[in-house]
Amino acid sequence: MDERLFCSDLHLSPERPETMALFRHFLATRAKRASQLYILGDLFDAWIGDDDDLPPYQRIRQALRALTRGGTGCALLPGNRDFLLGKAFCRATGCRLLPDPSLLIDHGQRILLMHGDLLCTDDLAYQRFRRRVRNPLLKRLFLWKSLEKRRAIARDYRRKSAQATAQKRPQVMDVNQTAVQAYLARFQATHLIHGHIHRPSTQIHEEQGVQIVRHVLAEWWEDRGEILSLSERGWHREAVQFD
Image (cartoon, rainbow, N blue to C red; front, side, top):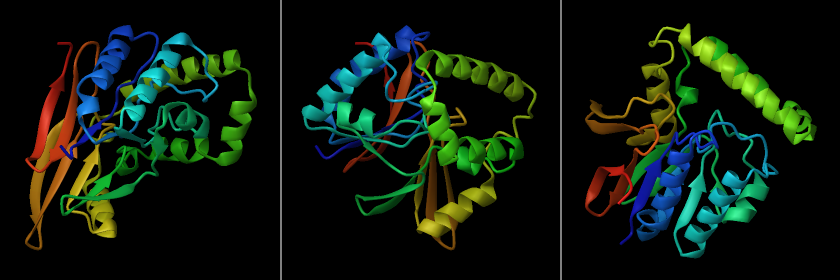
């Protein structure tokens, strides 16, 4: 069956072994029955470079390689936690990288794929930080550091990020509807799929007589996950769990 699966915000890390095991189980079972898997950002909780040699990450590489060798395509759209995913990771896994945003045309529908952080335009401090850390020169300087130094920087970033998030109003960290409408209009899309905000929902409204659908993907946590699927049967949400 020609079926596409979408997920995001798995936040894989050695500190979350249950989620890492669940994702490997998903790749070896449910995902291999689909034609394409799209991971829309934050597959990893903190990706410090494609040379990260921790064994748990190597097992994830191997599981993704097994999936793509089995005939299921896998596309990665980097998020705010794993924007350093690069060509070496793709060579090792058979995945391909997508820009944010990306337009998918499938089953007669124009579908806009995003991680979601670009839509949170009310969070001015985060948008400034996003532009700064994605500067090609800063990325290159970071990747020149040793793995241990990069791991220490990543730990410090996660601590500061948690502190900053705790001090922000929830409305500031949500998507801005004007930004949503602007991206949909720019790409002439009727569907938008994104994660980042960890508030899974499906929202439907009309604009000039056209139905617009926004699918917000769920965060994976411990032994619980969720995917969104698209096939000739339509759109469906599905829980991911151990058999």
